[in-house]
Image (cartoon, rainbow, N blue to C red; front, side, top):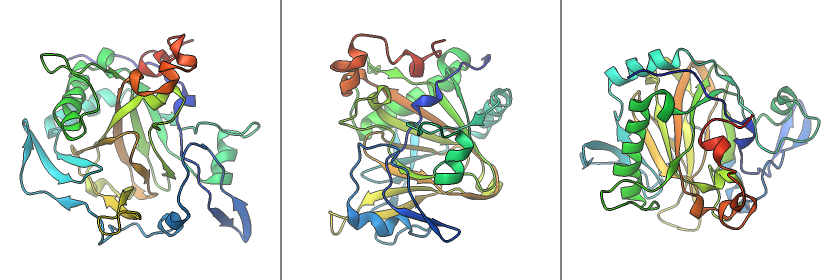
Amino acid sequence: SSCGSITGHPDSFCWSARTCAMTVTGGTVVPRRRLRTKVRLDPSLAAAFAAPSVPSASSSAKVCAPCTWDGFVCKERNAEYCVVKEAFTPQMLEKLGHFLSRKRPKPAKMKNEGAGDSDDERKARYDDRDSMVSWFDAEAECRWLHNRLEEVIQKVGNVEWPLLKADGTGKLECEFEQTQYSVYGPNQHFQAWHQDAFADGNDPEDARQLTIVAMLSKKSAYTGGLFQAKLKDPVTKNKKVLQSIRLDAGDVLVFPAKELLHRVGRVKTGTRKTLVFWAFDRASCKYHTVGAGAEVDAGAGILGAAKP
């Protein structure tokens, strides 16, 4: 299958949940930037922000006994996420590597950056996100990749969390956002806690329903860079526990876009590469049903080729 050139994506559609902690830099207390005001974090979560990058013993995550979703093997399952083992075979990863070698990732930006702040100033001041990304339309440029990601959404994501409608043949009635190719080198991260979308949000990307994170790098290719999530404590129910989710090359992490609070820790050595893919349902988002997007095709920029 041939895979063509990159299609642009508006960087303005990157996001982060607000953080309320204070950061000490060189003896000076600097307030964390309120990047988004839609999430109100419980003060009891403050300790979790400084938690070490190790799995919590009290987490409800568990490694599954061998099981499958219509051909996909479960590696780890939790009420809030699941991991598909080797959804991409070594042969697929090699083929994908050739396609992605033509991409030229650029510095990732954050949504709602303050007036006057350049991207470098934001990184220096808030230290929230520092990585390289490239956006492309997989359906148009690399059809086999799009089909594989859609298959995971249909056979795994929408089975675990039936958020998307399907027709009589089982085909999902949704749209798919552009795919994000993310590259993290030494000292790079996305350590600001964030969600991919918000149930009560009023932005175009709040139509995201299911998220896929496909790991492209072997565990031996980098150190650090853990995907971390805050999960409901299975014992107390009203608190959150920190869980580090370890992925190997070909593994795919799946979770509801409007629910999981997560981040990517700082890479210490090597390079960490992933693909991020979203199933997009406008009916789940006020922006597209009663807001500004109800009158215009406001999702086109993040669903396909960016508007000029």
